[in-house]
Length: 270
Length: 116
Image (cartoon, rainbow over all chains, first blue to last red; front, side, top):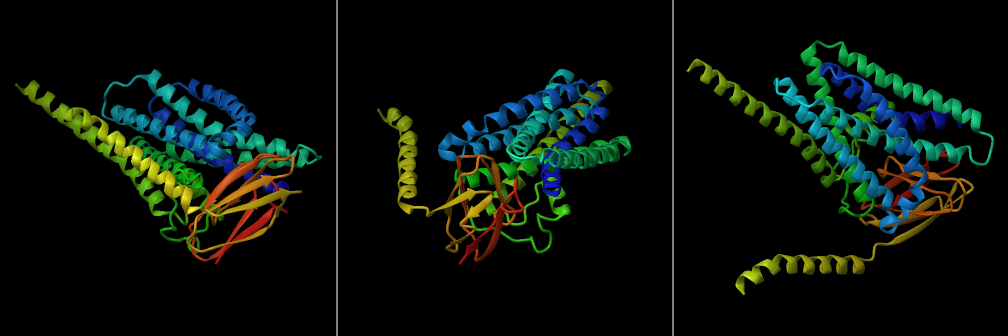
């Protein structure tokens, strides 16, 4: 009981903690005040409870695949919010004006959705396991251990990121964010395949012999970059699309700002 | 008149396609397999499905407690609430054994899909 509660909470917390740590580290570079973290935690907690309590209703939607559809919508919303965040970050790096209010809103939305998705499962787990017998203390201890490990890994990432030199911190933070974002697309596509909303196919390859999704490193890579040992062609294709889209956006914006700068300097010379 | 036709054509094509997909889906008849969860055990705990075939699993949770159907090998994960049922599509898969478990009660809730 103890070990399984450690593992389940760790898995749920890890995904949200990694995303939050990257966002927090980048927010430091953007010199954003930290109020957004408090709001995210509050809204995330409310979201977790509301979604957790209503999972039975959601499950019945769309002929029994409501959970998959709602979760996929949440993942895809996180993806598009991350895209917008990446656009704002690119503007910031290129010395363009950005609105701190919009930035804070996007970060709160991303974090709230991420916490809601993972938190609701923790709530279901907790009430399920402690429902009719006296595992309460063991489960609570397990949850605290699992949660602490997850948060520690998040903090480790945070300190690694903020201790890099300024530019590297943003470049690596942004790269991690793009990988997390692509992982969201891959998870959403998997959920829609599971719901039979997207066509299912034979797996494209099988790397489970090389790196199992069960292993600790496999789990970390799953949380961080959406690692799958046996993806289908559709899933892999959507993952690559999810990865390439923000990169094109960044390069496109960068080219645009460089052109503007070039034109401005020409004007000054005239 | 011709303009009107142009407007309606894509809609018509879409409707025909939709009907076609609905039709083929209804006729292709995805095999359905029922699994029960009772006292944190899967019953049956081993199911056999054909190779390269999509299968619809309907998991009936007879316990009052929730359970999470989880399988790394099948790439599937879904909460099945107490006294409820859940639908999970799996496959098509190559031949082999694909273990699954109940993440909330993994000590007892274990099973596998055998693809032949």
